[in-house]
Image (tube, rainbow, N blue to C red; front, side):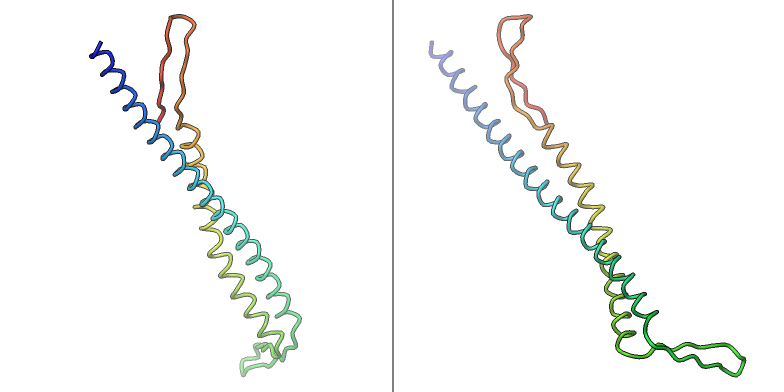
Length: 142
């Protein structure tokens, strides 16, 4: 009787440790999925805003007043003047920066989000009753 009781207590302690590990893994994977989802959304937003700024900068520069001069070889040289040209140049630089930072964030965020969603889905702890034989089985998937 003592051996049976000791085996039962030992198995419950082992089950408790496995359950704690399961909850820890599941919480970790859920937090990583949330983090990488935010990273992916931030990257997509930066990419979209950067693209719009880049196009707006090109439009601003092309609509700004310009002066065309010719050098000694007869080649034209166009100089854009005014605050609209400066604003367009700043918009182009900001757009390139946004696209340059947004694309890697978007790629890394979506790739890692998918990876941790799969890990979260595969982490499981369930009791599997079988009809073919008497008893139950416990499975820990990792």
